[in-house]
Length: 143
Image (cartoon, rainbow, N blue to C red; front, side, top):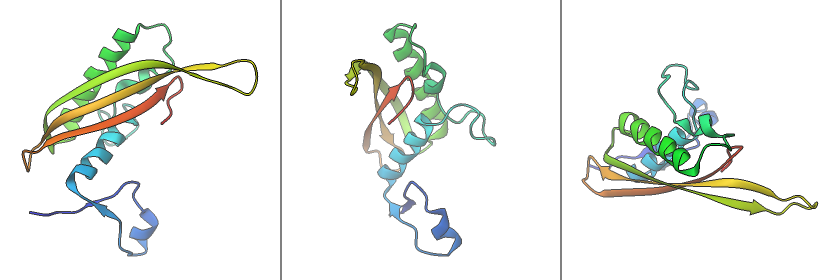
């Protein structure tokens, strides 16, 4: 059974004008939905307060240890992806946090934390292994 899914970002102007909308396959659709989960904070989606993850809660947290940040983000994402992305099962999330230094034009350099998130699971419909990688910088969040 071959289905197509809408590609993100969604072309709302095209929908309103009855134009053909870009589509993607099942795996790309899942990757896009996971990206939506990781870039949304809890409560942002007014009709579902549980949609999102806790990355935004620790975005400016420079005092918490890297291990605690890793665990907080990992637990939140496993719970959110398992409950929101029903096309995946056996979801696992590996989070790696590193500090990177950014050179500025002036004499001051900035240090940001890079969060690498690897999501693994099994596509329910096809029993295929699934894997995707998201990378963000926090304090403040950017991608």
